Image (cartoon, rainbow, N blue to C red):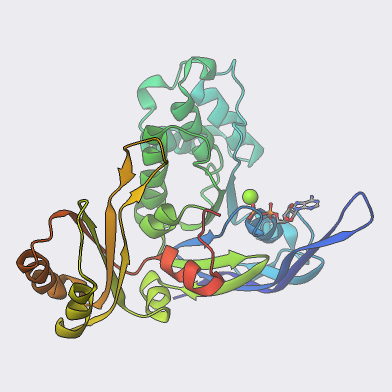
Length: 334
Ligand SMILES: Nc1ncnc2c1ncn2[C@@H]1O[C@H](COP(=O)(O)OP(=O)(O)O)[C@@H](O)[C@H]1O
Ligand SMILES: [Mg+2]
């Protein structure tokens, strides 16, 4: 597959007002392939916006370079930027103009006009399912609808690459759903390459063909989701919640020794939430197992014959959260 974006040793050091410096991005090397959704996943402050801003030519690298379709963003910024559409986090539309007028305006900025412009505006309105509202003023649109128009405003010139910096932050679940679906359609129906940043594992997991995990300005892992999860082992996590009940330690030992694939059993007993409350969190037994689903029936049988009452069972396959945890010792959300 062809390379769409390549970065080489991208670095950014910011000067703070007090004279100190901060290394926001510390030598990032990425390769983004044509036609894929590539996510940059990392906690707040990891360096996602800085990285994407250097790739798109908004921020000048302290060191290193990025190429877009072979064009250097530092040496040939015009040629490189022509290949990129951008979706800003804030809505950048004219409230008193209609949806159609807004898109036509952005199209003219890209040098489009006449029939070609009209056709492209029709196509994009259709694409975000807002053709029937095209002549209504933007200030009559819901937040989610504005976001959809905002999204395609960056696509008037049909760029092969679009980048989106945390486009779902602070929006309602329904609009978020639409954005995620639209991102997939951009790849599947418009043959676009998407560079997407997020701090949410679920989003990266749902969207990405490949993911780079960034932490403290450094890429700590990169690959397909399978490649990344294999790095941390292939064990599933089986979580059993158990009612208030005394359980003999020997049960856990028996499960660990007798069930094929099981490597470890952890037990967190029932916990009283506070002294003066009767509320409590249920006990949680976590079993680490290769091929967790295969091991499950036998574990359930062991629990049953010991008279243990199970409230719920969840099988968690290795996920990006587990990768981040394994590499940094921290949860993504922290
Ligand atoms: N213009 C700036 N001046 C100084 N420090 C900055 C600037 N922009 C970002 N930073 C710092 O660089 C680090 C990375 O920020 P950023 O790229 O915005 O991370 P993310 O998008 O992953 O949340 C943070 O510590 C942030 O405070
Ligand atoms: Mg950011």
